[in-house]
Length: 260
Image (cartoon, one colour):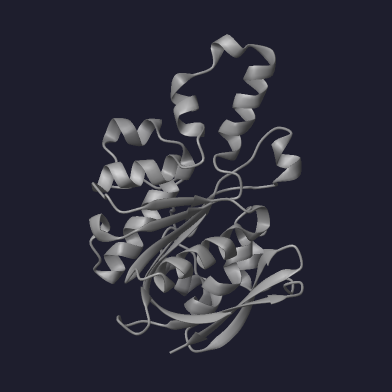
């Protein structure tokens, strides 16, 4: 199976690297911003909502907006795919612990934010988007499966699809299953064929095990659950052409070829 799409816009935000331009500078020469914010503050959320929203929602909205802005795309017109390892890891741990100990004390706000498509819901409400929004979770293969879902929608006739991938810190027993530290999120505004300017990617799903991720981004953010996406973003940050392998499931890899 193979196909081709164009990356019209990229968004990226991680602890210490708040933005795609900052990432490209770090990959090029190791430079870091002098003062980086602790968490994103997406313009899409009103101030009171921004305070209440979990880190995953703020992260997802920040990179989604950045990718749409870079592609000059109208968020109201773009279908989206949101991918995370297990949704809101810390809130899931809180929900399980509270249900086991004192179920009547569950926080309604935290319950509201515990659903796996919370970030997609905030996005569609905040932008007024009536296009389909999909939430994907596939453990370490979440980014690759999200990319395949976005491709499937392009192959089915969509002209553009927004892919958003993100994970925050895990806590409690869940952290032993899905270890995750800090904040890491990225978004790609994908267009069918060559309808937009930007790097072109070809996808090929194949049997086998993906090689261990290397590079400066993988080394810096190895502790985050979304780290398996980083080989592609390092390739894009360096520019030029090349191939990367992404974990796509049990004994499956997704080969992504980047062309100018």
